[in-house]
Length: 282
Image (cartoon, rainbow, N blue to C red; front, side):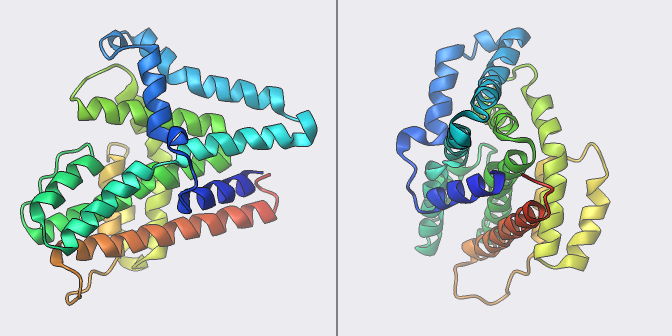
């Protein structure tokens, strides 16, 4: 069920068949607004309730629907949750606008779009630095919105994947608005620790293995290394950036690191398929 649900959801997302009201930002935005205001979330108990409510409801529904209607309703729940968690058309559109602006040489539009893509302020100044930074951001967002969610989805189920996405949603919201709230940052670091290291190792397997492996080994076993830094560093050395290319300078690194991220997702799907075939995943 895990593999089938993941493949169907990714196919729907790739074909842009997920309705706007089912996109994650739309669902999470409504969820966040209906529960507590940002000022109310200064309370650790309210923050804990906001983080735990959605995954608890998904876990309860999954338990109640298991075996009902020959498993059809249980499968429907997996698909519905997956559709919401993987629906990020707004992010895809923003990244597409960045690439279009880069290809026509509009640097002001590039920086403006980059701020929409990533909540962390962009510090690049030259075209080459912008391309390198956005390439790293592409690898990071591919991990944060797809690979990490897929790992939790297939290994631990939709409830844990929902927990990851809710924590990520609050974390990014607070980061964009420069708010400091309890629990979120520490829990985000904890939830990112294992999947970031697995995905970074996948970058090494999907790219320049020996060079990326040495960087991965130097960082992966240091508990304090942030997931973003690990993904940034390994992705950058795992992919060869051509010196001569027809693409503009500010988009060369981005395109190549996007290819690396796509290869890594393909590797993840192959691994999940093999684990399903051999009975490790149901």
